[in-house]
Image (cartoon, rainbow, N blue to C red; front, side, top):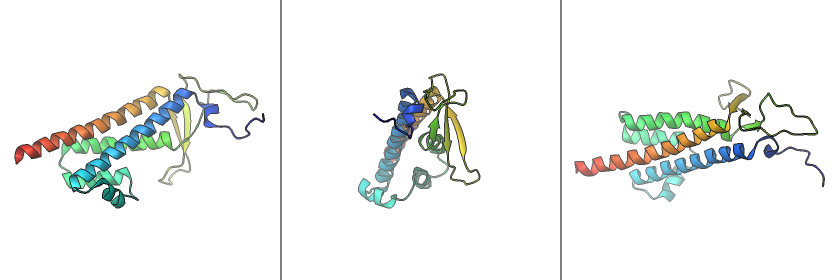
Length: 173
């Protein structure tokens, strides 16, 4: 069998890294859906219509819509909004980068060495700001897992905030 000329990311990164990258991507997708469901609920429109309206937008745009709806003075929502902005950058770094092993590892043409759990993986990305040609990121499995946990906490905070907001509106009627 002929050896693949183009290396796969799995040639460089351990399954733990690949799993961590996947968990960050999947959890962020879940958070995005929570934001969309909330937009549908507060607007009184079915989710299908909301998806038409927000089709070309981003989660940042959707959160801005929510912030305009609930008001910038809502301290709890502003904390959620700020954490989402921070995590969106981290998530983009992790999900949209080209990953390789840390600089301490050496790779020869004959033998690719997978990263170890204690090593940092190096990611290279293309920034949207165009101020730099390329960005370099360094993450460990633990730091990627921490990002995943923060996204999960963020989604929970949004849902909790919504429940508390609903209780306040029912109580005031």
